Length: 229
Image (cartoon, rainbow, N blue to C red; front, side, top):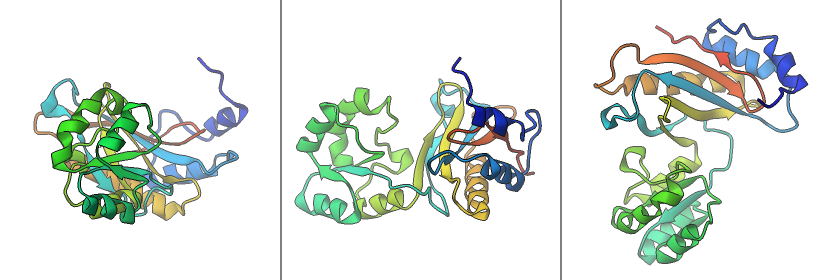
């Protein structure tokens, strides 16, 4: 195991490992950690009582954080037709195209955060599954990244819409802002995301759905968060 930094160890002293904090207090603790030399991202991890091996228990989708995520989101669009490609670029996509973009990504170019595709392009984009899948960048109707409304999709993701899906351990892990955000903005983003996940419980999930919630900064320890009744 990689040894912890002095800053991490010092920050850990402010956290009671077994305690669950209200969101507002958890955010205050994270913001009080000794800062790094950059504006750290604040992440949330939710351990869910699901078995991702079963498709009917997979938790996946997209969500627009009310206060954004505080970073420039690089979006690419797979589309055919000059009108759709031009609309994507006007909306702020860093790249847009059809066969040319497919070949570029297939060649190893992955310098983007979100990939959006029109439905008619998915037959070709699907062949990039081995490249985009492990990166979590494969377009999907469930996450809102397969659509004909290119203009809206690009703008929403650039303004703070995030994609999420359970990993092999049943965890959902997403960014919810930056340490520099006002505390109330982080509280609103975190609370809204938790409510969103709770409201999207798969019918096939049994027992306790949300088992554990934790927030942390990029370089800091996790702080457990209590699920509001």
